[in-house]
Image 1: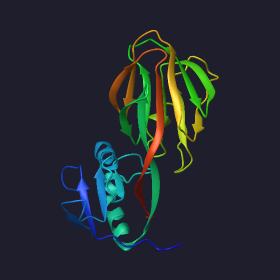
Image 2 (image 1 turned 180 degrees about the vertical axis):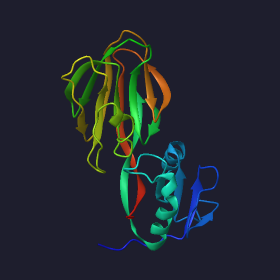
Image 3 (image 1 turned 135 degrees about the vertical axis):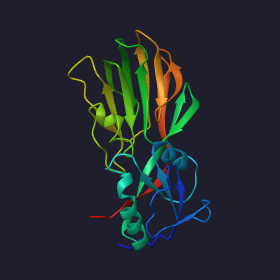
Length: 230
């Protein structure tokens, strides 16, 4: 295995006050940077969707695929020494009735908007109906986002390249199970008892009516860095 090239210049995105970069030099633009230190979920998502070529060191999300803020100096020294590995995570495009509404890197969620209301959701993948479930919602997570809301809803943490997790949120039936699918996939609301909202990376993007298909597919990848620290 080829040893990764040591990194010396990074751009910082997000984070206040300025983070401790150890031996790394902070630069002002992606063009000068060999990597981007993205602090916080918003900064990570914004950088991942910017179609920039520099890899990302995710900081301040889960400790499975991100670096804790208080460990950034140690992680920065690992990057400077070439002690890291690169992993690819998918970028998702979300469409409703064939029209693109958003892109995301963490998760896509259908959620019944009103408290104490449930709806019936369906998942289709590879032209096959995989489940229909009465639940508060359904969350689709990438590996990068799988340790967040998907795990809180009872889903697995997904290894890079293993697929997308699809987890019913508070299902009415105890027999409902999460799925791991390669994608693309389609979610739909079969019937509802209240408004159903579509969220992408935590931002509400649309209201979904019964029968409207919500398509989720991979449209690219983002490279993230995993420091090899003790």
